[in-house]
Image 1 (tube, rainbow, N blue to C red):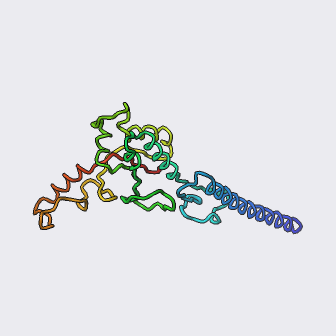
Image 2: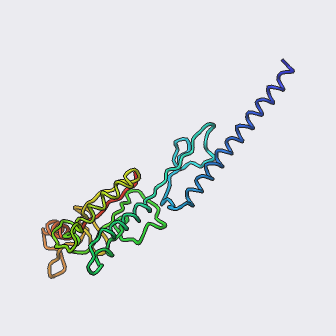
Image 3: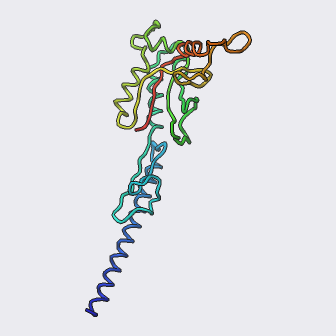
Length: 225
């Protein structure tokens, strides 16, 4: 028994060393592959890391035979294709309509998603603020080219077929004013005022609802799964 003990100790040591090496290799491999994804085009707009089911834990915290997962968001690609699709579907006369498709993040107009870090509750919309955009979408405006109305509804179907497994994409209408939009029932939106500059007593909600209806524009809602 005494002679076997050192052999057993050496064997345990070899297992420990092998497991430690395997752990390091797993961590290194995970980081290496993650780095490749973050440098390849299209670059994910953001990612979430899970180590043995714990979100945000470092790779080094992975347990023996554990799992390291990265969940990537590619909303940047979806948004860019959405903008290109709307541009291509847009009727053209002066070109103003197709140049006016606007990206909104958290209710504020932005140029793109570059450098965007998603926050809880952030919503992404693409909408056209022009007054006649609603008429085009509803088919109530005489068009020179057949089929050039209902631009956003058409875009929704195209994008769903291509990105339906990556993001939720929905055609809707949103009220827009001054480069931002406000949600239904939001009394912070613009409302009619009296000549004195004050809201007419008891008319705030009615005026807000009326203006909101006038300001509703076609939009695409985009959200990562």
